[in-house]
Length: 415
Image 1 (cartoon, rainbow, N blue to C red):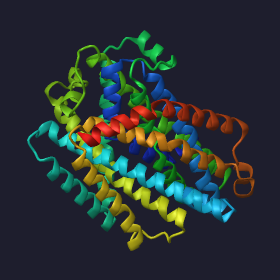
Image 2: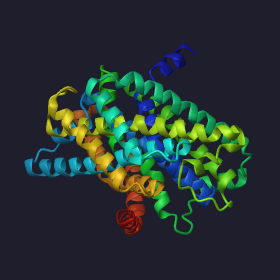
Image 3: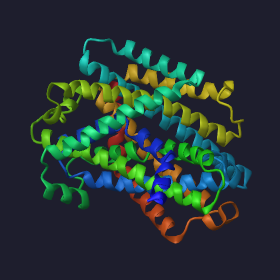
Image 4: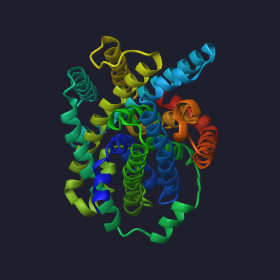
């Protein structure tokens, strides 16, 4: 029992990853999935959860053993200078584009939350307030206490979704069929990619490696085991929460003709248990999830860039600040200019992350297979097989959906 208690005390970086991916994109994408497709896409969330555990465990192990972040490992492990800089440029472009898209979705989630209770409030004003607060907190470093409070709100929201999913009396036969029988259905590829993109987030691989290297400093087998347990428990619970959102939306919205386009529509998924409070619950949850992620995404982009370029580790360094500031500004501008279809914008942002994922996942596998740096902790056959299979599946899905992604992006830009 004392051993179990000790293990639970080591829960940390994995919980941060879970809190990061349970953002407005998760609530929006999962609600839209359940409302439009019922239980049929639960398999995509199960696949996404397993994929997240597999790659986040690799990333955490890499950080613990090398005591460096993923960006630093990519820079140091590729010997050929030309290939090294090609890899660095690819990673930086992917992370920058992905984080800007994600930041846009995060800020848009805050807009959805506030507009759910105050529809008449200006979107531009909301964006400016969220962006300024996020930038101010990152600049001073005092964002940590706020982040804990907001993460707590997200946890409460997650608990309510699980309870609502059970209280909604779902069709258990259809639920299990949807979970273990892959099926795309008609016009569901974009949603499948969105579910993957909202769960297996590329920037979280950089965040997990860096946070694990600081949390577990001995590089021992015990540390690696603790990190693995942390990843399985924390991310597994995050996946269950995401599936609960799909189940709640399926049980209460599927077949009703409701098209989820705003926070008020999402509130219908939890009305059976919360009644008139559902709107406030969704509003606070979306705002909390969006604001927390609006801090995490630009910070992770700065850490990734710092590692890849070999910059000094100092959050107060002006170069470091400039990176996250650009991500916030671009996210705010895109949220304003493309905010006419907020839920569509969030889905496109998640899809962009899913398209970038195979590239970053490849670099993770490359780094954790280095005998020189990883020693006895390098990837085994099973981990490599799982990793390669996941990358192939993600590539296939993204390839099938790429035309649809470009069409949705074009429609979003053209209004």
